[in-house]
Image 1 (cartoon, rainbow, N blue to C red):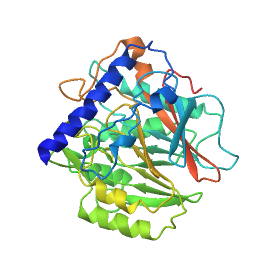
Image 2 (cartoon, rainbow, N blue to C red):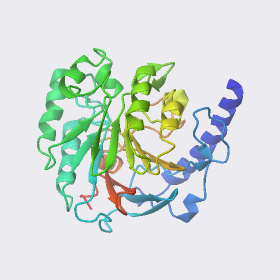
Image 3 (cartoon, rainbow, N blue to C red):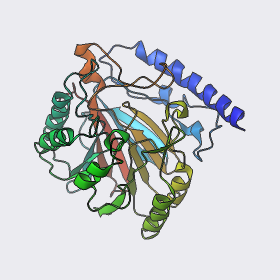
Image 4 (cartoon, helix red, strand yellow):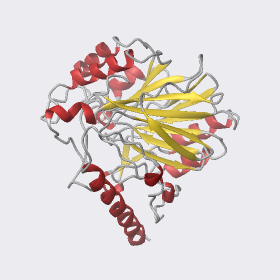
Length: 354
């Protein structure tokens, strides 16, 4: 069974690598719009044991460009270039996701992560309408030192939007099992940092999946039991947004880019009509729509990583200095059609908030 699964992964990765190779030949300033020609290019094999049909994987990895607006309705993904106007009615839901800021990192891939995080905040402040809040999907810091958390907090204070929700990344918890992170950001959280809240009739669930089991992220039985009980209290008509650091779908298990027990968590979400899953960790945009669930991973504000299987191992990837802002970015999410579907806008730091 294991050999068959690995063979399936390999077939899928060959398709991803082919697409990544094609896209990397495009001009650095291109806008990745995933038009119909791209939407037809889906993974055709489904050998993963994670409970998610990977034949629905829309192979659209975006490192560069001015951003893409994604909206999902009835399981169909559509897109348009970022900056073509808001789809959000007055008073509707809007928030921004940032991820993988890695405060304290100072290697060649980015010698000034403070400056690029500040650029992200400046871009958020330049949006036509202030978001309701910011979600940070982990790796706030690089080594979980108090000074790194202090720097993050100081930069975030400059945001027009003062409310920020966090989930931990593995870099935030490895040094002290997350003690300092929880002291600062987990006062109202359960366990290792999970919690939920409602906002404008959308249910938000923050999960902690950075405990590693055999290289993969894990949620664990206590968190899964809490999640099941939490979701039972919500009507199936209410949209759900789940956010966690490590992807809740298996992107590349060989690099730990997936969550070992995500199948059980995703099973609890099947009865809901609209589910959006936001993750970080891999430092690049990847999207997938599977039935009622839209998966999305965000760019980092610090440095890019290689595409799956395109290097010997994951890690900071050096690009030319004048290209760095084009591979970092933020994600904006807006509700449309009475909050029943969500549109996702990816913007790079060289996009100027367009």
